Amino acid sequence: MTDHAPASGPSVALITGCSSGIGRATALRLHRAGLRVVATARNPGTLEELARQGLDTLRLDVTDADSAQAAVETVTGRYGRIDVLVNNAGYGLSGTVEETGLDQVRDQFETNFFALARLTQLVLPGMRRHGSGRIVNVSSIFGRYAVPGGGFYAASKHAVEALSDALRLEVGGFGVRVVLVEPGPVRTPWGRNFLEHLPSGRDGSPYRRFHERAAEYYGAIYHRTRRSLAGTFAIEAEQVAAAVETAVRARRPRARYPVGFLASSTLALRRLAPDTVFDHAFVRRQFPVP
Image (cartoon, rainbow, N blue to C red):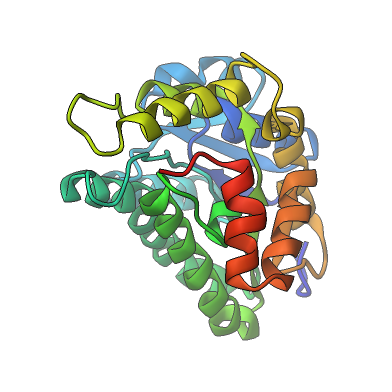
């Protein structure tokens, strides 16, 4: 898995956000690949099916420092090490910059960024001692660009990308590899939860029509209410899990793994096109804009 000699026995992988979707698919895939997987979630009841399939399960509320500390201590006490950390837990906050409360923004960053940073800090000392390790951070295409109504979610993923870039260089000399996985739209319960928490476009809001169009747009993706480009090319959780497995098992992994046609194509366009071209030729054509 790494450039250093592996520890005896199967590699131990700690994965967050395994109650459904990408986390669950990743836990099962790494388990089938022969890793000793510790699947975690805030509600242990959501992990019962994984336990029946032979995976280790553990309660972990990533936003709680004591819970994170206890989980890492439990796994290292049980197996002696953590070889792989997959930071997958997260959610999407939707809303315009003007109307979104900063308490909501703090909650978004607490889950999507600070929790990830905390767990990374907790596992790194052990990885350094063993001279090997793999940290896989599940980001998003919105870690590299942003669209109207998704500024704060994208900001949290931009932060994950920046942290990962710095960390990759800080710990590479200790044998620890840091990888970003960047999916496009994924049809999972995450998407349905995102839809349920879209702003309602309340009366009097200057963005009322925008919120209505955004609900229609994302409904087409996650509920397939009509055909759309993003809906046509939306991917399944298993495709993201396959990318995570590649990131975990590759001897020399890439820094980033875009997942799906939309991720590869739009990130290439973002890299090559000037901002004005990207804004007008892509974002304004493909996304609702106030």
